[in-house]
Length: 134
Image (cartoon, rainbow, N blue to C red):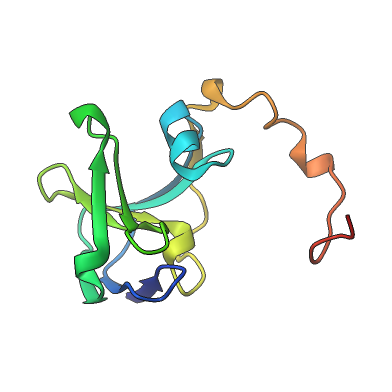
């Protein structure tokens, strides 16, 4: 399968060819910092290939203290982008960077014991189709 993706400003575009083995929602502190949200949502593949269609020179990669906690992003708009980890053995793709629906549903929540204190009972909150009046 082929999947297209891009950053928010549209200057970086990519294509992924292949399948994903897993889709994790990670609640660790580092992923929450990376996203500014309750969790990161990343697809993982050990066989898919990544090809940059445009803007590869704008892709920046940050490896937190050389720990292997890696994030790639657009230098122009800051959007999360895919990266290759583990000496080329693993493609990590932020689900929100896809220009299509995610090809598989989330596999699991990981590091759930580290969830933010406000990340509980969210399904009980009111739901709005768009931004509500303030």
